[in-house]
Length: 270
Image (cartoon, helix red, strand yellow):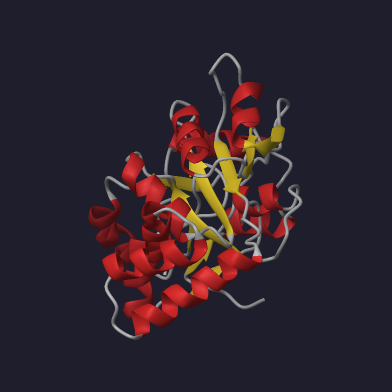
C-alpha cells in the first residue's frame, strides 16, 4: 500500500459505527492525529482502541500549528487530519494545512467516509442531481435573500445552527412563498429526523420553535413556467444589449404583467 504524509480521514457524524475499516487502520498507523477537539476525538479512539497521539488543530490555531506539523513530517512521521464529525475541509479546518503541505511537496490523500451533506441528500427526493452547497447559511437576512434569489433553479443546500434555523425558515417562507424545503437533524443518531414540505409547514412542524441537533437543509428548486422561462431569456438578452436594470424592469413588467420589483429580483439573479 502506498504511504502518504497526510491522510484526510472522515469520522462518524453521529453513530460511531459509521467509519470505514481503512480509516481505523490509518488512525492506528499514523504517528499523530490532528483534531479539532481532543476530547471529542478521544471518544472515537477509545471506542476502537486506538492509541495514537492527538494534537489540537482548529480554526483558531490553524496557522500557528503549521510549523509543528512540518517538524513532525521532517522526521519522517505521518499525520492524519480529522474533524469532530464528518469530512475535514467541509466547513471544518484543514485547508490551510493542506495548501501549505502541497506547496512544500508533501503527499496528501483523502479517504472516503461520512459526510452530513451526502448522507442527508441521499434521503431526500429531488427533481435533479445538481445542487449548490453554500456551507453555513449567513446570519444576515439580505445575504440569505440574495442566495435564495440567485439559486432559484437548483437545489440550495446549507448547514445551520439549531438557534438560527427558525429565523432562516421564516426568511425562506417570506422570500419564496410555497417553496419546498427539507430539514435534517441528528442524522445517524437515535432522534434522526428529515422533514420535507412547504416552508410554512416545516415551521409548523417545529411548533414550539425548538430544533435540537446539527442542521442540514435544502431549499428545493422552483419549476419555472413558460412565461418565467421567457422572462429569464429576455432579461439576459436586454442585459447583453446594455440596457440598464431600470429600463429592463419597465419593459418586461409591461410585457409580462410582473411588478417592477419582481423583475428587479430576476435581474439580480442573472
